[in-house]
Length: 187
Ligand SMILES: C[S@@+](CC[C@H](N)C(=O)[O-])C[C@H]1O[C@@H](n2cnc3c(N)ncnc32)[C@H](O)[C@@H]1O
Image (cartoon, rainbow, N blue to C red; front, side):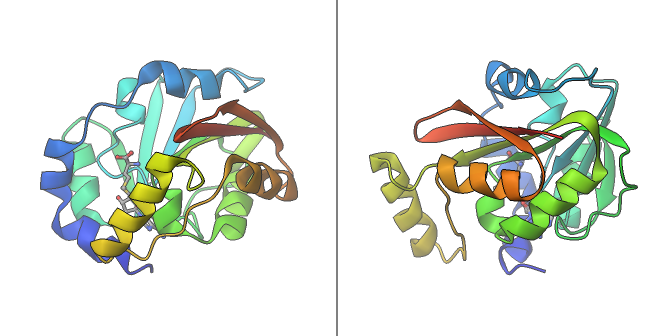
């Protein structure tokens, strides 16, 4: 389990209070890469379910390693599963979309995380990753700020994540570029 999880567990309530709402249009742009109806979605490293709780998807489940975060997610009526993104306790080919929003830089083991996402996706399903580009000016600031507060995070460019998705057997598309960017991979 990654060291940052303890901090997210302790500060789950405060995190949920201070974080802005996820932007629906950004998430939907990633979902549009799918080639199937989205009925069941996972929000991996989903914390209080900030991403999926904004979306009109029939079955929404938050997977997170921090139990405090899952308690927050349940407050929104979301289903929750305690687990590690590198070993998802989810059946193979059982979901239509996997979101990993603002979380991959804390989870870190991109190769294994993407292999797990690909395993649980149905054909035509999509992995939607929202991250921060460390090569942008705001990205440099974020990298420095996370180091300063003691997070053990690692940041990736859109090209890094596209390559990792392709290596996991997903067809990658960079949906949005910039400080906050989106890469989506269709299974
Ligand atoms: C910055 S928060 C993002 C939460 C949410 N996705 C959002 O957009 O607000 C990062 C989350 O990743 C979770 N996390 C970190 N490492 C994890 C792992 N190995 N497996 C599952 N969750 C993890 C943390 O517990 C935390 O809830």
